[in-house]
Amino acid sequence: MAYLKPLYNIINQGKPMKAEKVVETYTIAFTNKKLYELLDPLMESSKEADVVEPVKAGLLGNKYGYAPKKDVITGIIEKIRSELLEDGEISEDVIALTALMDKAGNLKDYFSKYEQKELKNKIKTIKQSEAGTLAKEMAQHIDALDIAAIFPVLFSNI
Image (cartoon, rainbow, N blue to C red; front, top):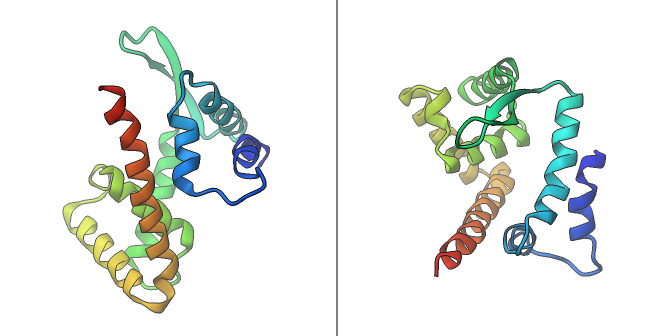
């Protein structure tokens, strides 16, 4: 988990830091230096774990980047499907990832309309349960991060 060291260095500055402040640190800057300090080790770790593959990137396709391998995505989607659409234990990771995918509008890329409805209902039920405290907090953090990420974009156009 050495790839998280840059994030740890930002967070561990003596006093508690809100998630919004962390997002601002990476998004409101004259350069992307801090962002790349976080993303580069993460990408190296992903390459070492063999979960990404090189792809053409850039507006003209003349650059290279990395994208998740299809079998990795399929495995994750199947895990979400099995935990949320079937009876049984649901991990915090699956709840968090599903909430993020929902917020980003990615559920429709991997799940049918019926499955999306079932996923959202299941998460809603989890949020309303006593065990859903974490899910509620996560949803609030996702909303706050979403707002924190939008503000720099809005104000950069002024």
